[in-house]
Image 1 (cartoon, rainbow, N blue to C red):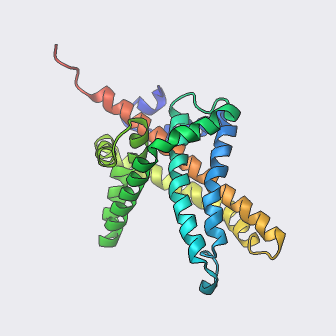
Image 2 (cartoon, rainbow, N blue to C red):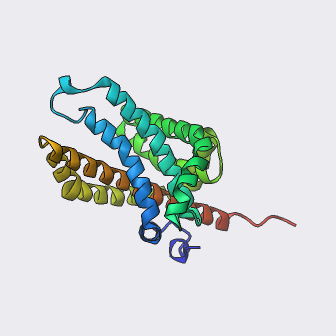
Image 3 (spheres, helix red, strand yellow):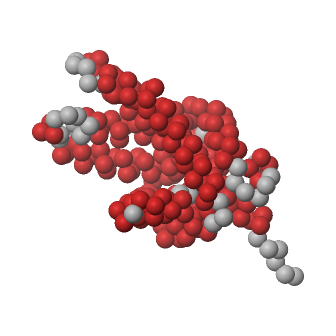
Length: 247
C-alpha cells in the first residue's frame, strides 16, 4: 500500500507518477514487449498514409486495419499493463508474456466496449462544449482499470469510475495536465524528429517509422500503468473512507 498517496486522504498526484515509473523499472522487459506489440497498430496506421500530406496516398484498407489493430492491441495492452501493475505478472517476461496475451483474449469484448463508450461520451462532451468533455473524462478516466481488475461490464466500469473519482477530480485534472506536459515533451524531443525522419525515402524511412511506432507503443503502456495506479490508489482511499459496518 502506498502511504505517500494516502497520507492526506486525497490522491497524491506525485505519488501516482512515482509508482508508475517504479513499476516500469521493476518489469522493463515485459513492458518493452507490451509496447512493441501496441506499436504494431501505430505502424499500420502510419503506413496507411493517414499522417501524410497527400490525401490521395491514403489507403482506406490499411486505415481500417490500423484502427482495428489499435482497438484490439490497445485493449490487450491495457489488460497486460493493469494486471502487471497490480500483481506479479511480468516478473519473468520471457515466460509470462505469451500466456498473459492468451489469458487477455476473453476480456477483449468488455475492454473494447468500455473504451468505445468512454471515447463516445468524452467526444460528445467536447462537441457540446469543451468543458463537459473534460469533466466527463475526469469522471470516467479509471473505467478501463476498473473493467479489467474488477471484471466489470462496460456500464458497471463507468459507474465504478464515477464513484471512485468523486472528491478527487481536481487532483485528477492535475494528473492529466502533468501527463500532458510529459507527452508534449516526448513528442517534441522524440516523436517529432522520428516522424520527420520516417518520411525519408528508402529503407531509412521505414526503419525510423518502426522506431517511431515503438515509441508510440511505449507511451501507450506508460499511460495505462499511470491510470492503473490512479485507480488502485483511488480504490484504497475509497475503502479507507467507507464507514465501518454495524455489528
